[in-house]
Image 1: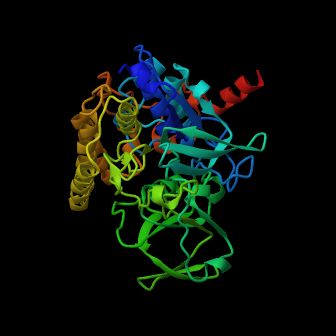
Image 2: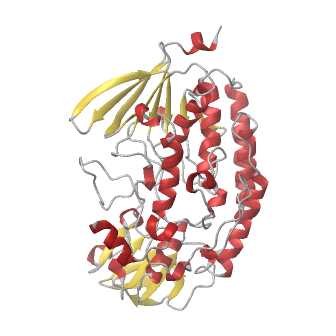
Image 3: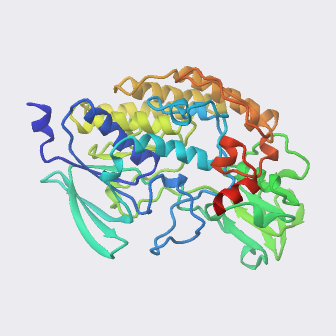
Length: 465
């Protein structure tokens, strides 16, 4: 039977147009450009633009139409890993920017890069913006999904059927907000990292961050960089364990609050003006019934997903980007290419029992990995496994792993200067440029400032013109 007949009337639904959802669209377009027949593809995005987390909004809480706000992005965010470790294998930074740039770009520059690849395609025609998924059901007889949707802009509810459903809605948007005795009486600012939009409000303030994740590390450093009086990070079990500059420190977990005073597990106390909960996120899929919902904590290999992608009890249900991440954009790509080949009938999955065995083997390897370098090696092996299953352009994954390990050492060496380091692209071989301003001195994160070294005054003049 021809590819065209197999795919006749087949429909693929994609929930989310962030990097993972866009990767899935791009995977289909890569085959379409080669003349392959395609299923009908429809992507639903509740925001008014693509990009997921990279679609920055000043809003907190709820969006324009009253939906829980998706993004956790903030002003002054710069890549916290070398761009050479996330580069698309089929769309290089050189191709996009036409010149070498530094290894750690700010948020607007990375968003520009993400958009560059997708703008070359017809991706926008597949996406329905301001549309959110309300509920999903699966019919065992027809083997089809029914998705109930809300068009937020015109306040219309409707449903559509799909043969495959790709969940690419991310897992860094529903805050995990713990309770500490007395926090309700804290007189200053209390927020979750999800609602952090910039460090400006914390100038000359004593800030307490609860958590030892990458968000705690980065938001803490951002507050320090932009003028906080002091930054204290409170950890539950594991310290970040690096040498902090004067004015930053790590302490054991908070046990309780009395007004503006925090009491810590080691018996010490300290007064603060603000508390930021960097306590992680929940995998939350309110549109999925219990039997289809991925239930996991943040880790490098969620259970119940064959190859980290296919829901084992129902492989037509596909999850992208649900892992904790060293690799990001290129990992989403490798997942999307494999998922595409399954949906196109180009990849046959083994039996449920064989899939379960494969999952268990990866779970065991994940359990054995303890150090940062071991986690890098684990996810590197995972990427290589995915690459062996599809025709995604191969790149030197082992060299990317080397860069990740150098990055880990750079941060240990100095948390304030690691973003000034440069790396070499495994896609083009280009050595990154040294940024015109050291990161600690660069308080302007606009694309114009980054690429062309314009001053604040020059930007204002350009805006008036």
